[in-house]
Image (cartoon, rainbow, N blue to C red; front, side):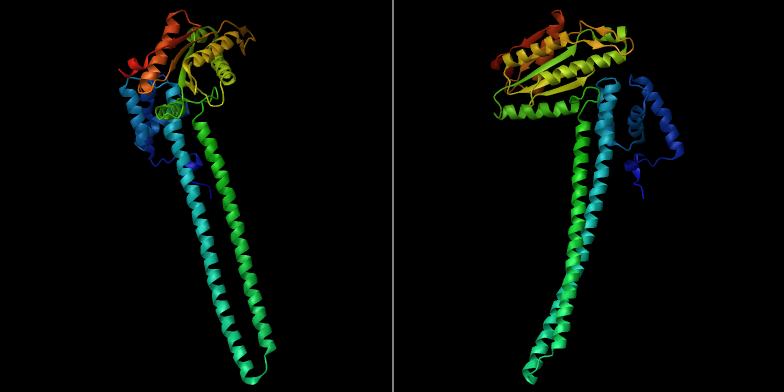
Length: 366
């Protein structure tokens, strides 16, 4: 029987036809107020919001609207991944694990019953053997036929018990394989939920989690230095207006490839919104981070992106970058603000450059 609810791709919706018609009307109104495309993900977000079946989603949407932030395609994607798709994954996981636990419990109960039957058979065999020995002591003769039957019975019971244990072992091995497969699927789903689909970089949620962890480790003295590079593509609106949004996506993907090639294994490159990206650099002091940023800038300036429609190779694509090193005690938000200010300085200074925000520890804690 196919799984129900979200596991079957139908979510967990219980609304009537009349209710869904009203939700559709309200969803269209909401979608018209925001710049996100009219695609199924957008409708799924607004459906769950308006149906009142996803409290966490409602809180997240209300928080964005309260701050006056428009729900564009990127915001809808993040809301869907965080509060709709991940909920489906969690429900599926609970369902699979519940089934596995029930099957293992049933197998153990069956073997427990078999073990009890085997114990009783051994007790009977023991009593029969005692009786045979007592008879042999009285009569001086040993009933070989009775002993043969006793031994044969024990062999049958032992063989049956062995089959039961082998069956249990086989069933447990199969469940172990299912758990391993589930673990792989969960890891793949987790990676997908934390990855930007266009670039393959970490998305904003993954970046925020890594940022918080890195700051905590730096505050605890577990790393000697921690730096951040904030960057975005220069004149990106002009690129979109001139060549189209599909080409703009290719430019974003090209910058992502530069980041992947110019960062180390412990670094984290992320797309945090539109053409905006960031690189988290553990164990990297300010001057070294500035050198990484300059390497990224120069490499992207050399990049050539080809248009799919005409085959034209577009040059003179540039990126501006801002660099800041974390200062213990300042907090993540102040650190992010300093990196953004450095990026803004690069924009104001003519673009296609790296700016470094330097601040003394005394000023940071003031």
